[in-house]
Amino acid sequence: MKKVILSLAVACIATASISAQQAATARPVASPTNEAPRARLSAEDKAKRRTDKLTTICGLSAEQAANIQRINVDFYVKQEQLRSSGGTKEASAELAKNRREREDKVLTPEQLTKLKAYNEQKKQNQTNAPAGSKPDGAGHEE
Image (cartoon, rainbow, N blue to C red; front, side, top):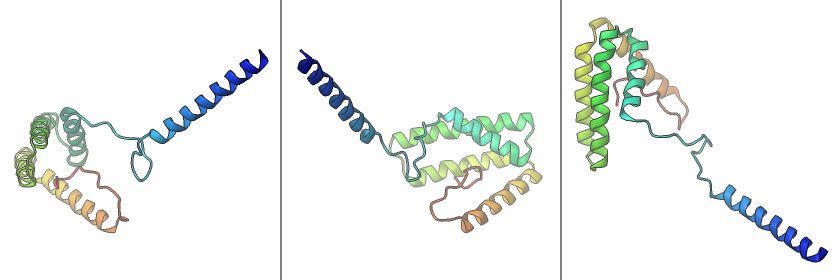
């Protein structure tokens, strides 16, 4: 009887050990830097993030922020539709250009100057950044 119980215990431990090893090796690698995988943001979340960033950079009023938010939600919804339908890079670039033009109409000349200065600084930082680093995505380059 002791041998049967001992055999079952050994079998359970071996099974648990093998299962644990398989679970550990089956996990997807998030990135080369071992960061946790990111969930895809919704169009509204992306728009809010960009609007918040522009508010910080340019000092948008509440009315401007609301207008920029609408422009960005529209852009990200159309961008998702374009990607899901297999749109071209040219179509995506045209969509981004349209967004920039619409945003520029909302911003004052002083705010446009601040945004351009921010974008120039970002370009300079990217030029000096180590290979593989990511831009923060707040400027007009998208």
